[in-house]
Length: 216
Image (cartoon, rainbow, N blue to C red; front, side, top):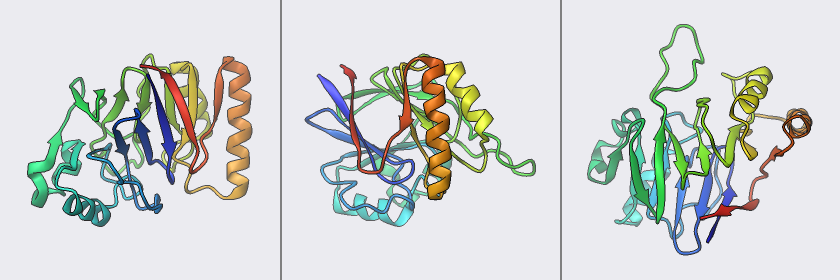
């Protein structure tokens, strides 16, 4: 059975297996409705506003008593009122959510400022195939890499080096909400060039677009 990936705004995606679904990183820059519809499992990579909307998450948990959050220690400390439904996960651990086998990858956010220590950040490898790294650049063998397309902490050279280090069988760029139309155009051209270099599909996933991942 295949799984589908749907991009909401910026870094938020919904992964569906036809029976259940999970959501990763529903942040403030993902304002679309319906993100939590039919979802009992939410995965959050780290605490920055573009990856978690605290008010909307807590409201969703209040509306759905089954909704459980899987996340790093840094996020969990902000969710103490609902701690009984927060599962702290760490690098190397595995768990099952919405029928998916999820592996936890990494510990810290990519360095973004010389005066500030990186916050906690865990990436999620879903069914051994789809990697959402959050704001980090872990190198491992994956089928579909949800690669950060742009960020204040990442240069275009960082993006290219990361793609060439991982060599995924497909790379779909997310994390592009800060870009203007011209910035998206530059990103698309860069991804198209890397598709030629790597000989695989490398492109930006548009808001609202759904794609099929490999067989489960």
